[in-house]
Image: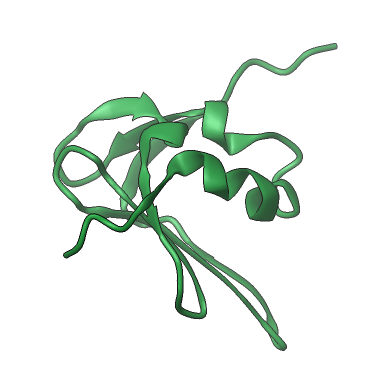
Length: 89
């Protein structure tokens, strides 16, 4: 692994198209080590066909996101939980 990562804020644009909220403000719990913190703290790697967000504590893959001609792909199996802010009225 190299340290050529961006922070989790880079997910705001692409994920806004998938979620109706900004997930970077959400609390992510890593399924690998149990670390809990804002998704904005994730280490995000690009340069391939998509984005890979890794836990800053243990480097476990939290999520993968890619856009292809066949659709948008989101793999979140590395997240134990993604706690979203309460809905506003």
